[in-house]
Length: 196
Length: 390
Image 1: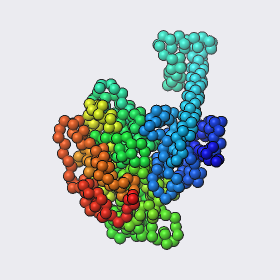
Image 2: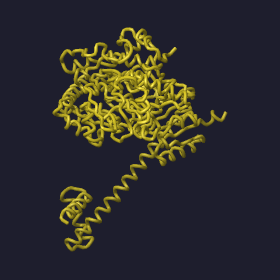
Image 3: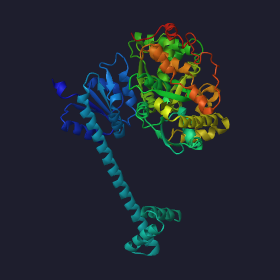
Image 4: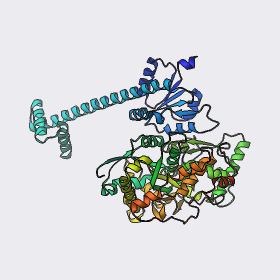
């Protein structure tokens, strides 16, 4: 009963990193049959070819609407598909949408067997957003560092200050004007460009 | 109710105009509402976020609101609409290749949908004879006016939409690309995507959907029924703000400003010029520059368009029955009709509303008998091609 032990899961996600994080999590949890679809063209045909038990898609993917076609009675559909969330489980639906992920299962697969998969998807999606946030924060900190360095250079040149004196001037101006040092630095760069 | 934050989801399409202008031009603020608009990428997302309460209201396909109330294809969550965001506004665009094939077969005025539907039937038959793949038509959602308009049109000419061609769901932003690279031969979608395809020289607008139905409820301002019962004042204020916005948009003097508001990158994000053409119902229909104008292309509030008409909900329900999405039952019909709430519209404005009867049966389809919501079974029996359940 291979299918009983490990349902076939298809991840539809244009982000290869997030899909990898999710896939790894699923494999660690013992779900060995995991496939990733990255290319959205002919999505339904790709899904039908893989014939999964569970489909996981990120909510930022416009192709979610394409999946809705699977609920329709049509000869193209081999097995009926249902969305996992239902009235009896609005908490899990909310958690799922908050995390930015949506799951579909084929009819007949027991909910108890799907719940751990969905929970895992939710936690992995949340982990990915956290990573993304951290990355964005690091990036913007780096950007700010660069801006401050440029502003320092301008101040040093115009006022004949040392690097440390220039920094102190930026910082004290920021404190006096109750602004971020990065904003002060940006104004200096803008002004310097205007007056070039 | 002042300041209660409201989150309203929308898809970047021109028929979200009344909602976007209501918020960005300050009509909602003037009603004491604090609205945040949330741009979404799929109807599934809009529906789900409305259903689970992340959105208070949403720009929603009218048939999705009905399907949600009926529990078709998804969770059953009763939805009501106090304001109709738009009538019509879609168009059928075909590839230059299919356009040429159709024009070679038309026998009569190509603006007449019966003429093009019969031409399509001949093209389909010729392709079958030649062993070619069936034509592929893109549309936006299984429960969409686009789906029903395409089906109604081609079936009138004898083309079975489930047997003779393939209908596929495509997200609107992907339509143009899919037509350009031959993944679909035609599509039915809302503005601005038809114009985008024509401007790129890769598509011809074959029909405005107003050729097929004179008045089709396209998108509604949807809220959950329980929400509407708990927040009647908020809903009334929201409805009034939408009426004010619709009146603003429909005034030709304001069109430029409306187009600029809608063009913002975080709203619809296409050029104001394309938006203006859409609002004016004056579209370039061919890459050679041919223009076509129709007063029925898209109605945002004028001619009684904003007041929900339950007969239009009944027509949409009848299409769900015709194409096997819903069984037929008097209860289901009643549920579908009850999604459209002219009483809430009238209550919000504080005046007794009037039913627009420019089109006697409220829809004005180009083929078949006049629509009769009181006997859907008999009405549908008049159509040869159908795939009813059971």
